[in-house]
Image 1 (cartoon, one colour):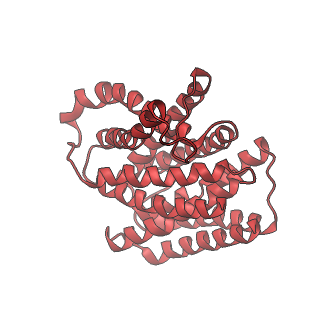
Image 2: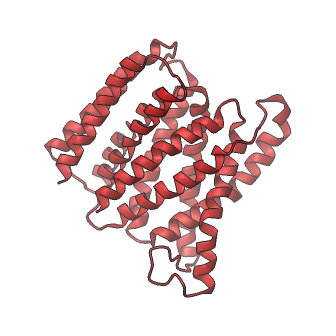
Length: 298
């Protein structure tokens, strides 16, 4: 069941990436990110309030148990980690083709794998190792595809932003496994979204608002709401996948990167991005890697 939830999360993440790319096109990054945190918190705030003041959700997967500071302090750390990854990722997404960003993000589970082996003692079988090696190979092939568009992986700062987003995202994934072993999934997901709003407020007021007229202006786009909706649904499936006792964060993380399929199709069909043939080879390698991971988890 946890593997099916991981695949569902991957599909939803693909739409999330596509709507994020659409929202960031010729738009100010920080206000889009701020609104994403606001709308995401609005999705979960009703569950927090209903659970706190009524017994309606008791015993359901949407119940948000009331917890104390000993739990909230861990969730606040989660908020800072995720927001760091998002800031790097949003800026990188704005300045790079979706067909480049997606496959780079698909290599994130390799970092999670190393951490899972060192921290949680997870071990991979032959099929799973093949999947990981294919993911690594796809990254190096992608760097060659990027050069055809004038994107030098060694000297392009936005590539470094995406890589930093991947690293902080991997740290977040490992931390999620730790959290899910101890806490209710809805408590973590609901409250980390709320805390991100409070973290973003000073960032918006101090970093963006005073210089808003000197940078790319903010414009409203309805896809900003869709970012929050699809991300919330993807994370909901993800956290419940990790809540299963036999789930493996290294595998869940890798499967979630299958979102690259959806985002790649959006990049090709709606954003008219270039050099699709060479990037398609990279994508196929990722997909074959996902298939081997699936075989190894059966």
